[in-house]
Image (tube, rainbow, N blue to C red; front, side):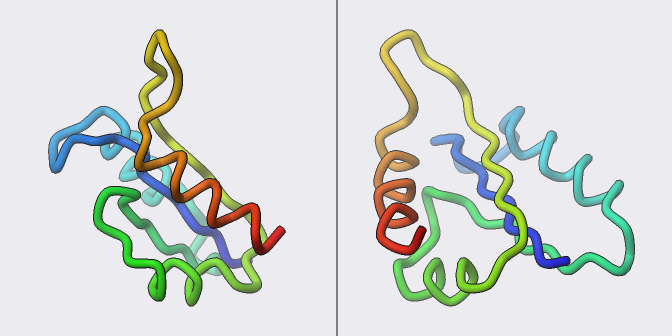
Length: 83
């Protein structure tokens, strides 16, 4: 099973989203292939390469009063073109 984990936090490090993704990675079975990407740092080419033929997508992000972080929205719009 190929899983992509997307960190949607705008923080560059030490975010709660990053801690959750790290905990998930430790609990995934050894037969699963997973890739953890930061929505802040991912390039379009890298994103497209990783998103093709995945079995599951996990998105972890902070929920703000007015919506989701804008950089994560950009990534989700890219996803829309493939699914």
